[in-house]
Image (cartoon, rainbow, N blue to C red; front, side, top):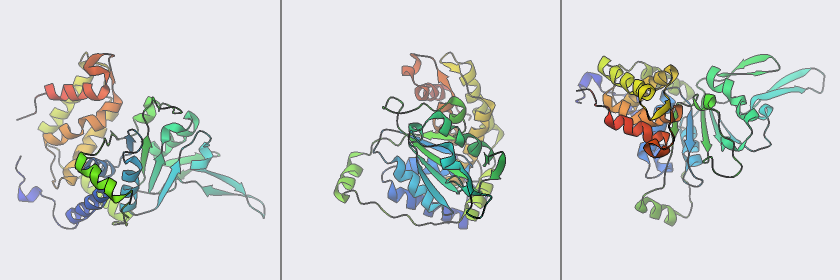
Length: 314
């Protein structure tokens, strides 16, 4: 689709997005597509789940993105003995008497939840309110989290020893689930020669800048033909025999937000069908349940095959 001059993103926003992409891509080499999807997730005001085998750059991507976005940043290493109060904060007794609230690491603009599926369901559930309501409740008192608030979580595959499966209701609170995958041969050779050296990422924008970009993404136009294409895809997951459970209305809304954000990341003020195609698997695959044995038994493959069979609008 051609891009009319009036629909192109120009000026400070375009420069800011270009700088963010370059900085994060410099830390996670050879994965520009993953970097773009991660930025899209943030600009759609969503939370990101990175799921892959250890050692492919999940924490590198999360840390680089968090630091480039500026604002406050905290990292939590999830372990089996972590308690909910360790991340939400708690009331502590002061020397002079009385109690004072001591905020936990959730009180930051960007929270890196490293290996989230290595902690118990009780502690995982402490994130539920924070991710959905942007607040935490401790001892009956609710406290707002800073804005913007983004959780970037990493997890190892479920068949690794010592992991706890994330419940479906919490998976649904992640806008996207991404797998980084192995680097190509040339990139891996560069990484070997670098000897494990990591590039330092400096803050490029403030939390106010990020909030402004989120507002710009929400203002992107989605033509009716793109919405119809999106709805056809969502409806397909509910009626196709390859699925036991299809996408919910909240999942459809999530894809709609992500489509707008991707258009902004791509430098457009209007969404196109390609935005839906590029985001269908990252946004929808963790929200459906495919029938055992269909499409090689995977939710990702089931969504991808449905997408391939769905004709795009003219």
